[in-house]
Image (cartoon, rainbow, N blue to C red):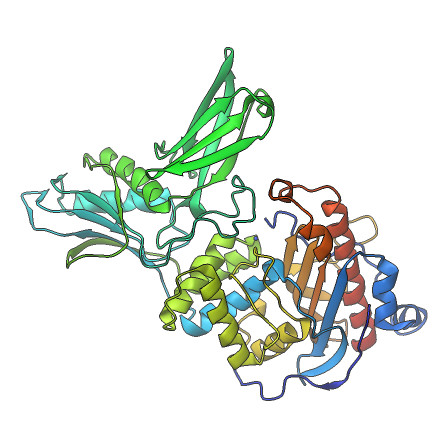
Amino acid sequence: MRGATTRRSFLAGLTAFAVPGTALSGPPQVSLRPQMRGADFARLAGGGLDALIARAGLSGEVVCAVADVDTGLELEAANGERGLPPASVAKALTALYALEVLGPEYRFSTRLIATGPIRDGILDGDLILAGGGDPTLTPDELAKMAGQLKQAGLREVRGAFEVLDGALPYVRSIDPGQPDHVSYSPAVSGIALNFNRVHFEWRRAGKGYAVSMDGRTGKYRPDVTMVQMKVVARSLPIYTYAGEDGIDRWTVASGALGNGGARWLPVRNPAAYAGDVFRTMARAQGIVLQSATRVSRLAGGGTVLVTHQSEPLEPILQDMLKYSTNLTAEMVGMTASVAAGARPASLAESGAAMSRWAAERFGMRGTSLVDHSGLGDASKMTAQDLVGALVAARQDNRLRPLLKPFGLRDSGGRVMRDHPIKVDAKTGTLNFVSGLGGYMTASDGTELAFAIFAADSRRRGQLTRAERERPEGARGWNRRAKQVQQKLIERWGTLYGS
């Protein structure tokens, strides 16, 4: 691996503002606790950055960069200009994009709209559930909206029940290369419910299985009819999917079910799903609605009867970074692109709009993204690009408070709560791809911005679609990548923190 160590002013011209699947994401592992300069300093510095990376024996490529936050000076880099898939580290850039374009107090609105007059509690027209791009909507909010509809005096709807999802373009799956059944790659549209996941539960009943599909929360468990599951006598494939007429039709292999269990499955028809659940909530209030019809635009005017507003954007982004929720990243990112005037027709177009913004705003000209979550491995980001954005973002302190703190670990894998290096960062994990980017504070208070990307593109490229959920060797590879990340962090804390 070719390395480069530089000391130069990092990304001249930075302005005052600055700038999850996934299931394997986690903090760096295995600590070599840094000491004061001395034997430990010599050991970590010995051989240089390239030697440290080479000793790890990790297949593929490892690239990194680190800079002083106060001065913006790049302290060290190894192939920092080389673009690799950032995985969920891309969500840090999405957060910055949304904060600048939408603002931290932005709220998503979901509305109930009447297209005709209401007389004596009867709506002589259609009722529309209009999505506003809220990625956090749950059945609890839909139940509250149905209750508010009743409190407003509505008893009957004589027209159609429609679900408007055109606030954002429809995308069948965040990453079509993922297996159909993984819940972290659902559909995207202008309306979402339960992060566009449906709860599938099964238990043995006699010689077969009893199954249920519902849109559950802690308070409600509404059954859904637009997702159907059939148990089939086979061993493989475990799941098959087919969508037709607004219905998600699944089959599952009986040989994989055991005595019982549950899992979340992705929803491919978000409007039908939200409409199905809202009909149940309305019926509980005595309001009977027709089956939902999906519409992409509001044909005429109407009267807003009920509005639900989400939390402000800032806590939504904090949860997105903490739990690495892909759907939140995509809906927030596309909403920002629409607000900026891009009106993308796909995730790739919206990812390109964010990439252009990052290039103009922070000089990230080596970065090219195909989505906002990092799930698509065609995205590329350079370590130097990200570090430059992180340095700039620290000037107004918008990002670091939103990032998750990570405790470095000892050789037994235990978090060392008194470790002298403090890290706030975003992890990113795909099979044979691992990233980490954020901020670290050394024992003497020196604050550094860093980015580390590792990828074995050859091994990842050899995976079939069916192998992408749990391929052989991926867990071990990603564990070793996280060990490299921690060793790099401790090197930088020792070299530049005293």
